[in-house]
Image: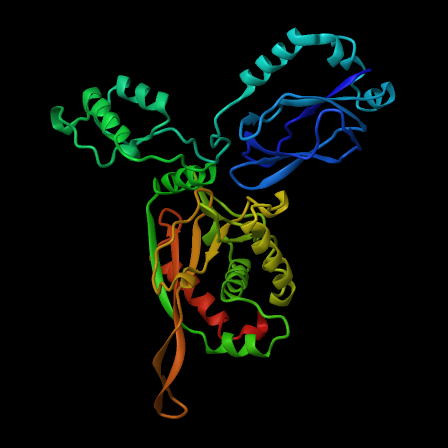
Length: 401
């Protein structure tokens, strides 16, 4: 009977490999077409690989907690000639022997093939190359050694060089490695590596932050009277989307000598997940009212914490909103993602005295700091300040959001 391969699919933009975390089937099981058979984890989410056709599981070539690249053969299904023809794989059985005919030699060959396909989790397909850059006084030998170990110049920030003009020599580097081995070390998760890489690349740009205190009383009153209650970050996201819908230039990216304007107002929001941060995306947020966004927002928060975000809710956003006030922080300078120009943040609210002209006296109001961090190549302080002021003004009329 033909043997149909179970292939590691492309699980999303910029995903090059995934780690096998669970098997939903075993050798000998009958499976249906599109049945979930293997659970895999990428640096962004946990997803399932489905069977390409109806058949019986003939072989599994992969192991738990090992990573395999997109396109790797994870196993084989014994299927009918009809199923093979439907998939355009009539030759699958011609050049292969059945699992029972291969014997020990065939098993060894399959194991070797799988072993060759195993890779360590990496971060590829990113908008900006992830190679180390910007370090001075590094010899080609040093760079080659660092590349061999998967290290970047930023990893040596605390290493004092003994060479000429403070140059870090290869001897300094090897001593540094010896010292590291004497310390307790744990493996960084693929998500932690991805976040670190994104922040390192973001920091290659000149970044700046402006801030503005914002009266939250209107938001709190609106939320109290609403049947479906939105969180502060969603109010902020909707106000930012409306502002950028009026003028998308502040969210543009500088590519060479051109400002590339965003094709749509897709805004991401930061969600803390285990060992990192995920950024689900709300599409066309400028065209959807706040009440329409609440359900999808809550759904994506839940999925992000489970690391099960769907592909249509990841990547491609033009700005991010983050509520660092949930950690009790009143002020922060978040860093925009490498492919974005803006990140808007809100701090913890606190009661402050506010002068009320109508009463000619101070009253206590809830206030929080809004911060806007931006790529200074695209925006100057004045333009960033006007954008932040527009967001704050929109928050004073939440019924229009």
